[in-house]
Length: 138
Length: 365
Image 1: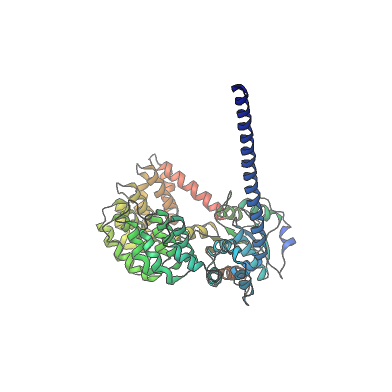
Image 2 (image 1 turned 90 degrees about the vertical axis):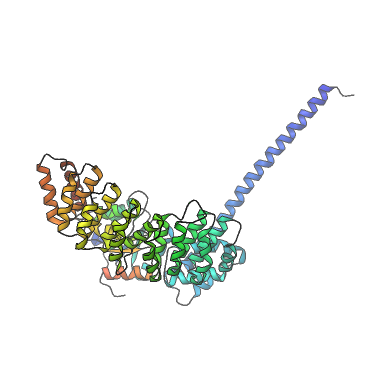
């Protein structure tokens, strides 16, 4: 993955931190976008892992919310690419997934997730997790 | 007087006309029904588009003044099924207060009564739908109504009832779910993974029933109980797992107990797991290797090391992968194996390569 060096500065906004949401389920995608926008975030949304990587090339958000089971590249595949890319390796990543077994959670954290939220989920809890990753007390 | 030839020609002409008219009528019906369906789909999409903001407000817990809830409940009666389908779809994806608010929409539309009536329908599809709707609505008081469906003649209804009970989370249903795994009057029981998912979603009231089920005469039930203990360990489970594991004769149930011991066990289980890692049943042996890895003890390295030379390739590779997860001592053991001329070379090489790729994935240099 190649990330232009000046991409981050173009998107950084201390007033409105940005979040990239990748989920193939339109209900969940719309819901997460809505809730994060209500919480004061600038949000972009894509529907699969490949589109998520393209979106990261266009600009680096403060946080990425990734579904795990998506067509094509899974959320774990995207996360691996993020952690293997120099410009992205410190990016905060939340996995939002229906895979709730202890071994799935271990896999998520071992792959490099900062937070792991299981579906069905509480939108309020998701915002709390994103806030805490960014040190924001909303 | 008409000749037979003229009569035949007239008859043929008449039959042709009938066929042409029938074909035209059929075409018109097909096109009409397609146009009607597309019109209904556009109408429904328009309605759902108009209600989308209200739906998101309720589902995100942002509907402080309940105005969005009122918009969803106030749709005309004939449009209620369309809205309810969308609300049900959203309801399965959220939990907490937003889920309760969405359930209130369904309740206001009379879905609870519809579902309760539907539980005794002749249609298996309707019974399954009704059970799932009650689960989605988190109507905990409806759990007793769902229990008989765990013995339904339709396997789909049994699965829907178990999943609905999981959404309700009522641990008092645990015994009925376990009974559905090994039914007396049906050839096939509730699939074990559905039973495990349901039991894992239940509250603490399920714990004693699950422990009791580890002694059930049917190995399928023991397998489910042991798997649940592994996935969702309860305090004090370790002695139970050790005792049952020592008595277990069924390979599938034994595999589950061995897996559970990896989650709830400790240093005292190392010797037992080391022995089971050489079990003649490969599933049991693999589960023991995974449990040795999960215990994460330095002494696990000594137990796993010789298994890298096992003649069963999957077992040898799994043991090697486990060693890479046990820190520098495990990796040194594999690096040492690379220098020799033993069957351990290939599994060691495979595991070290896999570990390097995973390390790159985690950003580890």
